[in-house]
Length: 296
Image (cartoon, rainbow, N blue to C red):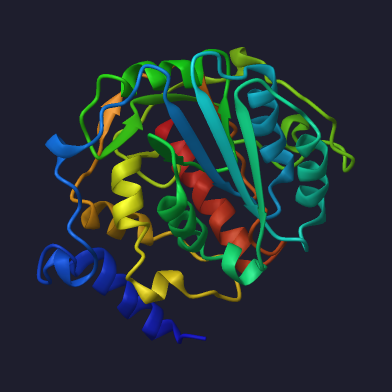
């Protein structure tokens, strides 16, 4: 396990020095030229890749949105990485795996939690293996509501770029743990839905974390930080996703915003991936509340 100083040093090296002091080509293959990227076909294939650790109460909304609004004009592969120790998510996977939905292929991938905690490991595997025209590296708390994915596909069909991201989303206020939306029963229902009137418009200023939609040619060639060993090494706890910044430098693209409708996200104070009632959990909860107050 790396020391605190070692982790700090890796973060500085990979996130700040790549492409500035240190040449990008030291850390990965040269990305494909934009003009040489494959055209997006009229009936394309999109892949969504999510990770879930103790977020079943939010992941159920994402999975339900696919069940409620399956794609009509394109094929979708939905990939979810999870760990057996997360019993609520395992039960959720079992329920939705039984659903046969139009144009959707489920891909449930159980991995050791030490690999799940380093999100770049799963993203890299999916990037290298994808057969999709575009691959969306998402988080499991995004909700693809009515018309969302169709609007994404409409935008991607005419886009020439390595990386795209939604220009906006709809978000809730910062909800406490006891709010009914984030406090579903332990035996999660089969399919749920949201009340869109609870959400407000929120512009997205850059491709980050859950908002990275990568051209398939780029994903297959570059992977996801595949040559940065630190980000491909299992860990003992959930790690902050600093690799996303390094990834965008490696593919030499900060992303093109695209118009998207129906993308929703439930904002919540308590992060399930951190130990409940821990100092880290409490500090992060308070910081999120301060940040939310600053924007309201």
